Image 1 (spheres, rainbow, N blue to C red):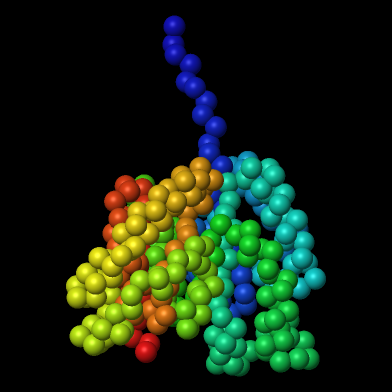
Image 2 (image 1 turned 90 degrees about the vertical axis):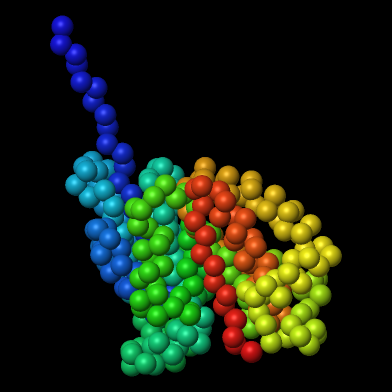
Length: 297
């Protein structure tokens, strides 16, 4: 008697909904995904989002990885994106919402350099359009699986970041961006977690350490051996473990851990490096370390 082959239903296609602030780099991000073999649909009306996902589900092998760009160019149709996103989540679709953001001053500069009006500014100024869009986008940003701040990224760095996030080069489940920063320059807008290192004695007030940074042994040893530092690191890592486990269950693939001190030169840099070193010991976690304000003083 011949064996009957088991019919295996193909998995659902992987879908990215790519949105965010105008000028934050959505087009560049889409091109990067396209270069990696994703099928990219740009400026799709939100009402067609569910229809497209349904079509893909009927033949998942045809287009297994699809990125859909949706932004405020949809004008009056755009508010319905929230309803479409909620519908996809309720249906259990295999998708992620990616939100690209940048600071207001960077967005203004990009529009001015491109000599283009903001799609929502109307008869007003570019900052007026940005303010209106940011208000309309607030709920989407809060519900996004990934919020990527492109303020300090050029087009090549943004493309590299997208490649890091979505290329198929290993069994990475969670990608963590560990970022040091200085509170006097502002908290990173894309931070999922913020840790304050200002309880540690400041090497700035130690003359022989002032000129060095937290990446150098002199400062790193001073910071990591200070009272309370090891206790903080151990407890902070322990607190992150259930969060990372939840990310794995909920298919949340990206998060930013921001570690701050006054200027972003000594304490935050040393602790960020140590956190990254210990977090990287997990086999399914990839770490990217960024020192946002190092060298800014």
